[in-house]
Image (cartoon, rainbow, N blue to C red; front, side, top):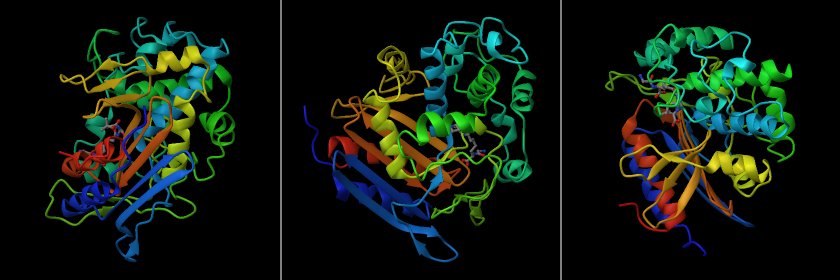
Length: 351
Ligand SMILES: CC1(C)S[C@@H]2[C@H](NC(=O)CCCC[C@H](NC(=O)C[NH3+])C(=O)[O-])C(=O)N2[C@H]1C(=O)[O-]
């Protein structure tokens, strides 16, 4: 069944609302076959007053988790990793509970505590303390395992960056190759994602990009330019840089079966509800969202200092949308930006 045409006017209205709530700028790009729709609002750089445009790169935050999942599931398809084996079989140092499996990590059911809860409790001081730091995977895992598990392995969904740091460690330990190389060889190059990179621990973004602006906890204070950072606190859980065209191409290729064999794609898209209304779900490194028009889209969201991202596609990969607002620590903006999904896939004014 064909989808209603995207409501570009409604996307622009969502952007205007996000700006009224504190975002310096926003962009949305929708791709469907040869057609693409572009909406850019506000500024990419508030000092230079550079207008936002949809071709700018940005930090994608936890959308990186889907890239990490693709690499891991390709290793599963190659017989190098067993989804239901203990994660400790593939790690250089053991997690505290042998019952944690690779699948638990991919589906946020391990119970591993999320160290960013403490790291960023005070938003700007926490960010400033780590923005130029370089962590090893083990240092981040140790921060997590200093705290008890949130739940027994497999007993509940509890989102944790630690899971995807551990998955990065597994990829590197099993293959002896850095995740950056896997991303490049397995995803970026084959899909010709020319504006997508993993440059950890370099702090700068090359090419043309949107600057990111972090709101302070005291919201009466000015935004903090958070563009340059190592993102070493996240790495395989959040350090990819991309743009809207590449993310649309990535999610479209993924859901249309170009990156994973059928069996692994089915594992990835087998989702479990994570909200009471059942409209939001999580599979393996992949979010599902069922929209008001009944369409379910698959992708991921991202929150990294200065950048909110939504990147989703239809179950057949035919229509993809990426939206960015270049601010963060502003939940109102994040929720507002999510309304581009309704406008892009249901073609209606968001309620
Ligand atoms: C589950 C999420 C929302 S959080 C997770 C990951 N991002 C982070 O863990 C960063 C958390 C601190 C970000 C910071 N906030 C504070 O410091 C608050 N004190 C800000 O807003 O820039 C990501 O990305 N994921 C999002 C996701 O998957 O959508």
